[in-house]
Image (cartoon, rainbow, N blue to C red):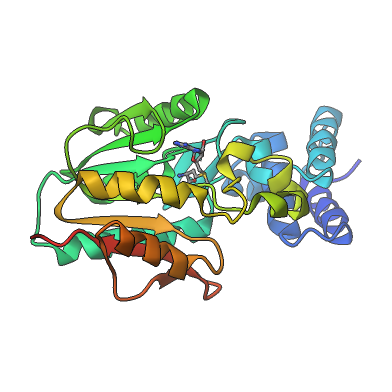
Amino acid sequence: MMTVDAARRALAARFTAAGIDSAELDARLLTGHALGLELTGMVRAASRMLTSDEANRLNALADRRLAGEPVARILGHKEFWGLQLSLSPATLVPRPDTETVVELALEMLRENPARQGARIADLGTGTGAILLALLSELHGAVGTGTDISQEALQTARGNAARQGLADRTSFIRCDYAAGLTGTFDLIVSNPPYIRSGDIAGLAVEVRDHDPRAALDGGPDGLDAYRALIPQAARILAPGAVLVVEAGQGQAGEIEGLMAAAGLTPHRSPRADLGGIPRAVGARKMPR
Ligand SMILES: C[S@@+](CC[C@H](N)C(=O)[O-])C[C@H]1O[C@@H](n2cnc3c(N)ncnc32)[C@H](O)[C@@H]1O
């Protein structure tokens, strides 16, 4: 028998011993999940005894985490740009690094003469993370998310509805931009960009829990950019913007693909918190 707080601390110690970097946070989130409590509820419950049902639930969650399942998968949701997004086995867990794509897209869109009602497309939308973050900032905008996975699109639709954005979004199953019609003011994408040969060496949290279709970028990691950049260039309006996420060391080659498609790369890629050039932008210059 132990108190809620002692159980949380014991779990954090087990996670630390297992080499989990985010041991304290993971222990707090999983304890809260097992007890059905938010942070303030956890503080209030800290000194009461854990029931045996709660202890069993917590142990089961701990075993999953110790076997390499990410906390977000266990909880079934992840926060991105302040939005709580549901996950499914067909969706990537949105990463904090991807927020740099949102930041650069907003910056480049604002450099254009102010436009109301921007049309946005998010190619390979997954949970809808990038699209929904942008729409939460751009109140007159509308957007379309595409994905090759029908199940991911179902998850994205649910997320849009929960964020009150259903009437400004549509979701289409197609190869990147192939099914889109009309022109767009902003196209964003975080496509699969891991080299096929590197996937086996990824952390178990990613390799065994993110869908392969969300990771595998082909032999050199650039297959998706080769497909989507020319597609996007054709449907950007004059003056419109393309922003994509880049894997480490890929920004220069992506800028080359953008230039080859007739786009003008932005001043410089935007770095993530680790200093890695992460968001690469380009504009379709008006003729
Ligand atoms: C790295 S995940 C990014 C998901 C989401 N945009 C995010 O940033 O969290 C890449 C997404 O591209 C989708 N995808 C893979 N190949 C695709 C294709 N040929 N056409 C459209 N989407 C594709 C995957 O299903 C996955 O949802």
